[in-house]
Image (tube, helix red, strand yellow):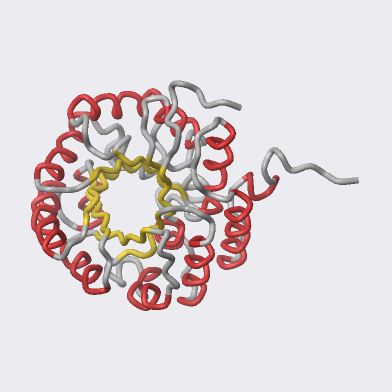
Length: 307
C-alpha cells in the first residue's frame, strides 16, 4: 500500500518501556531491566529512554538507575536517554554518561506540586539552569510538558497554559519539546488544537508526542498527529506501565501496536515488528502479568493460521 500524501514518510520512535513502563510496575530486578533494554536494542528502534534519575524514596522502581545503565550492552545504532525531574537528577544522569536528557514539568500547577513539590514556574526556573549545565557537558535536553491535555486534579488545561510552559523551556535553551498525555485525557480534536497552536507559535521546534491509551484513544491520537505532520512519538513495549491516577486502566500505547498500524499505512519506523513482539513477550514474563497489547496477543494482521 502506498503512503498517503498527507502523512510523513517515516517516524522516529522513542521506546519508553524501561523507564515509563517499569516505574509503574512492581519493582523488577536490575538484571531484568538490563535484559529488557538489551532486547529492545535489537528491534531496530532508534531511541530508548533507559532509566530515570529520580528520588528512590519517591519512585523506588528506579533506584538502581546507575547500576542498570552500567550493565546495558549499548548498541551504536541506538540513542539512549534518561528522564530527570530536576537539576539533581540531571547531574546524576550527566555523571553516569548520558548525553540526552528529558526534563519533565507539568503544565498543571497542582500536578507539578504533587510530583515534585513545587510550582510549574519554580520548575521552569530550575530547567534554565539545568539546560545550561547539560549543554556545558555536551548533552541535549528535551523539555517534556506533562498534563498537556488535561490534569487529574484540575481537569482541562488551557492550550495557552501549555504553550506558556513550552515557551519558557524553549526560551531557556531546551533543544526539543515533548507533550505528555499523562493520564490519557487527549482526544484527536484536542491533539489537533494543541499541535496546531504549537506549530503556529514555534514552527521550527522538534516536537515529540507521548500518548497514553487509558481511555482507548491512543492510536487515534497518533493518527491525528500524523495528519498534522508530527513524526516523533513515544511508545512502550507491550503497553508496559499504567496510569497511577486510574487504577486498572492501561497506560502507554504499545510500541508494537503503533508500529503495526503506521507501517501498514506506508509510514516507515525502522522497527522489526516480529522482534518487537518478541520483546513484548519478554517484558510480560519479566513483570509477571498480562500486558494490554492486542498485537502481542493476536500477532500482526499478516499472521495466518496454518492447517
